[in-house]
Amino acid sequence: MKTNKTSRTAQFMALFRAIETQRNQSDKLFSDPFAIHFLEPKLRFAVRLSKNTVIRKYISNVIQQKIPGAFSSGLARTKYIDDLLQTTIKDGVNQLIILGAGFDTRAMRLELLKAIPTIEIDHPNTSNFKIQTLKNRIGPLSKNITYCQIDFNTQSLDQLAEQHNFDFTKPTTILWEGVTNYLNADAIDKTFAFISRFPKGSYVIFTYVHSDILTNPDAFLGGKKLLDDLEKLEERWTFGFLPSELNDYLNRFDLTLIDDLSAVNYREKYVPNRNESGYEFYRVAIAKK
Picture: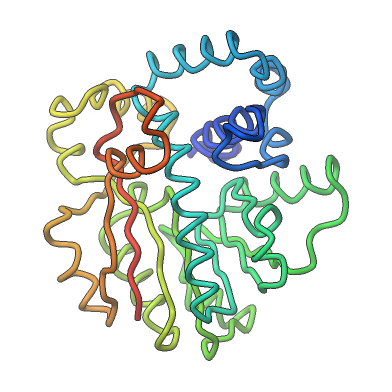
């Protein structure tokens, strides 16, 4: 990420959620009325136009040409994680920590989370932009959310936890969406070691990319172009897992893999009628301590 800018990929995800919110109530996967506020003016204009079915289809086709599979994958992923998150709350979790929160608005838009203490952790550029945008365009910040700032590649979550007196006695869900692919192996290990400090009954929900996308991007539709575009944005992907090795890796941190779905799987589950291909290398996993 450029040092003086917010994450461009966080903007893309907000754009996808904002467009989905414009769909008819009976046809939308979810509603995120906050997402549009994080967008540049021209993107906000496009979102408002997307209420028209023809224009929405045109925008969807443009996105598909530029980033095959990203749009439908991002929407299905959002809904899937919403459902996973709410399942963990119903299972007794009473604290949420969002690592690399970006423009995630779940703590505001999901009714079940409004009574759950939430800690959002992100890079200062994105975090400060998010806070200021919420204050300027929506109003007072939600009282259940605490915002903390960190650079995951250079700073320690343990130090941050000590500084802000994190409570490691509560069953906690740690949500880590859209981050692991930007880190290095050491940062990944340290983050899972941090996650392992939470008590039995805690969960981690995280995304990752299949490691083959980094070594053989041509094996995936649009893979090479995507990596080239990310390089230009200075948001290069640097880490992936082999799905076959994930369970053993998590066991090192006293975590048991519950499920691990690819974009193919959660698209089939949530958007079977939106015919897109691409982004098959992107995955969502959930594990429990």
